[in-house]
Length: 288
Length: 296
Image: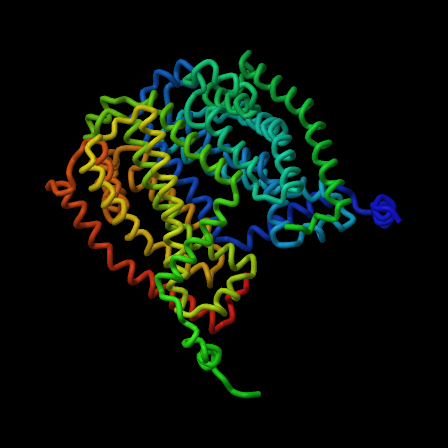
């Protein structure tokens, strides 16, 4: 019997009685229940972010507003940095949640068991992603008001919040392909997460997380323009600083994020599917 | 069923181990350090990414320095060179954090990989030589990171002193800071054996150190918030960083009056190392008695 025949026989036993929405929700609850077991971990995670907010609040005391203003982000460095910190968890969710899930399951020897269940791995991943989305939103809801209390000038009316929700969804969708390819590399190479790690650093530096990209020399800015996060951060900052009106720069950012999503999403899924199938055929899912 | 306590069990298993202890404590510690280094150099991709980490983290603050007002830095009592200010801060804080978290991370790895019980089974000195070896490795690795960051900072134009005598003094300060903070690492490693989930606490610790130590902003800003300022003075890292910065940026010798105050405070924290070993032993014994070594 060939490997393909063996796989197809296994596929036949799959029953599709339960809707995929319920399955995704079940996967979300699974992840939430696991995470809620580690309450101290969550507490430390929140405390860590709060300390970061306070650190950049104090740093802003010695920052000159000129370059922030020239880049179009108002006159407060604290507001600029706060927005970057507030959405950092969404960035992690889109770029690293899948690879972190795979790596953990691989490390604890449970990956093969999970992938052997009749539920498609994509469903499990979407459940995880939904959990991280909810978790990141709790962060956002706590951090933005904290920033306002400390003096950040944010526009938080219904229009800008609605716009922010749309931009966050686009942020996740446009950055997700990087996370999917990174997860595929983990399946293939069985190593930590070198690509995810490198991308995190490259994004932190080139996408303008801590300083406006206008400070970079023009030749380095080309790298920034290749990263979807540059446009996500720009649009979110402009929306929260100036309100939810659709300016030409925000429209351009949205258009670029949509292009990234439409072009890169199918490619990344194809890469992941190919590596996933090869790994299953080689029987190396459980190899660590 | 024979009625036997946990202590009796451990003592029974120890029988016969003493005659096998031929190697010295130092040799065992060095072996523990050396095998860990060999593992490190076998991950070349990991090393390359660490290099990138060093360069990019230095570059981030290089570009942030364009936004910083040198006049404000001077008004707050520092040199106007923010690149030197921030690079010295992140180099020392990462150095300490990497060293401190090293043991807890190693515990995490050994326990989750299921090898910690095996290590305990061949242990001859309550893990002391193994601990020292791992601590040494942590410092070797973080020293490479530390020196690399300073070199990158220097290449980016950070105005560090060129006086070798001051650098020797700065080196002494770093060793002292590391010794004091290794106590925290040893305690955290002990707590990890029993409580398991401490990694995030170590990340939080690094953020707290960055916040209260004034790693990327001048500490005198905290004078606007007196409670926070006094808390920061209770942390050994604050004094270590102040000594290190004043030495390598301003060229101030550590025996000048202001520096001696910070140095004395730092020395007061030295007994923590002894406490660290005691805490580790307590947790290790607790884990042995309750058979928690291989529980993850």
